[in-house]
Image (cartoon, rainbow, N blue to C red; front, side, top):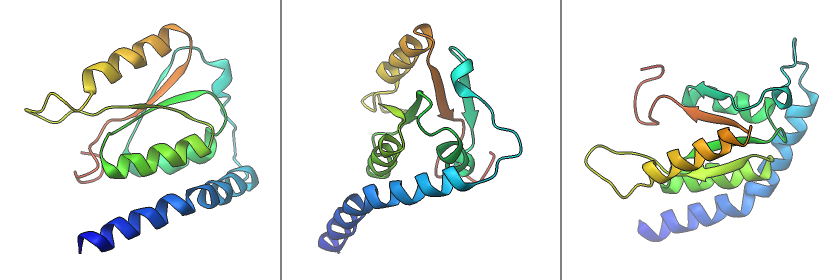
Length: 133
């Protein structure tokens, strides 16, 4: 079973550039009713639910947004895909009772980016909780 999981993740990592290309095509061909210009904003924090992350990924490509992504294995997939789409990524997460997840250093890094005038995106829910809780 462990060998199958390793194979599955290797295949996913190999497919990420192709998936990124497909998402770029989709994002560029969607007709958005009103296009929000992220580049005009300076030092804003965008808070969203995990379920809305794909919308930001499609809408915010190549706009200099810095995204907080967890250090878990699924976070590695998300981080690589977001980099394919032109996002900057900061890795770190928090878990109650565990100090070595990089949450503090990630928060400090995000604050640095905000002071530089970059926009930051974070999810306000955890990936394992029901939607919008």
